[in-house]
Amino acid sequence: TTMKMESNFIDLPVGIKFLSERNSNVRPYLYLGTDVRIDLAAYKRLKVEKGVLLRLKKFDYYYEIGFGIDFFLQYFKFSAEIKWSAGLLNMLSNDYVDEGKIYHDALESLRSKLLIVSFHFE
Image 1 (tube, rainbow, N blue to C red):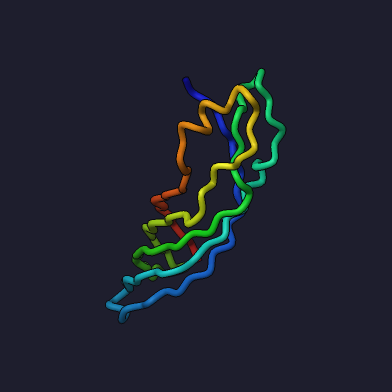
Image 2: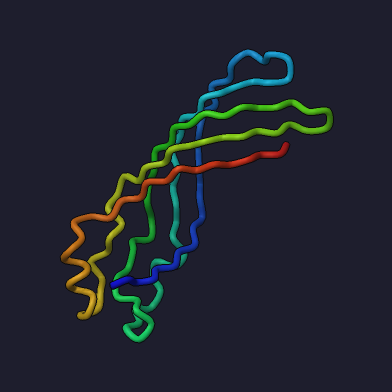
């Protein structure tokens, strides 16, 4: 059995880039940081007819580690970055409809793990 759960997040990241020396027009870096993600759809109404039987918690806190490369081009800087982001909290809410009890009881915890590939143009 599957259940569709839609989420929209606001991210509030704080991080530090450890930059290496620039070699020609390339500069690699390491990234360490934290992130707070707010799920805007967390308090949607539970609807059995639409298959929404469980709910997620609204806030989660993450730690992030990654690396990237800055490319200094003629008119702008382009960066490619890969980050691993892992959630610290159990996102499974204790709020569920009666039909969702079997799904809730089957899950001990629900934690986020993300591999983020991003491109930046500055």
